Length: 284
Image (cartoon, rainbow, N blue to C red; front, side, top):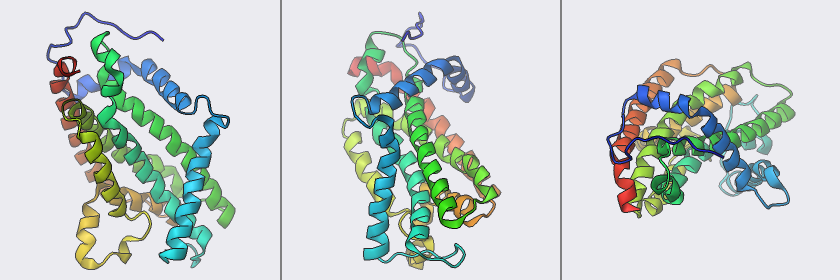
């Protein structure tokens, strides 16, 4: 694979505007697709099952989580035709897992993105800003497979699909934007502060249990509910279930506010990345 080269000084100031970001993503779109494909295929390289693991892994975790939280912790959801069976619990749980996995997969890798691609920093002038985008592309691929499993399971258990499921890309888009912004920030911090990689793992674990993945928000005591609602995953998980499971239209106003906020955070993360990237080569 050939990478774009340029005579730009790697220590020079880099553009930080969203327009510059858009131009970079468009200019490097083929490289992003190629490296995302390599990322997905390379994850299962050498395994007998190959890409089938991307299907088997979420199914296996779905079975385990469903057993633990429906049988041991006795978590319950109502609202699907009055049915509170384990199969219906499974699809509701799976919807939350898809959102959670998309977020955590990218951010858990973010602190090591530059550290694991030192050659791109030192030996070639490479568009480093696309590395979080490539990680997001791989995560979206696995989320798409998981979403297909969810829709197939829902159709199998209920005999129909809600037309509102077509809105799921619009529901996930604000989370994708927010996650990219945080990934740019963390990938930069990970170069200068190696403890970031360990810290983010703890933070993501806390966010998992402060998200309505394994239980509904209504099960949270009122005095703690504001903490759960402040979690950036909560709103998206609830909206994903609205369109996929309950058959309701998304909260357009809420999504609009979330998208605006996520875009601002993404710009801050990208600007920080661009401002600090000139120091990567010196540290590495």
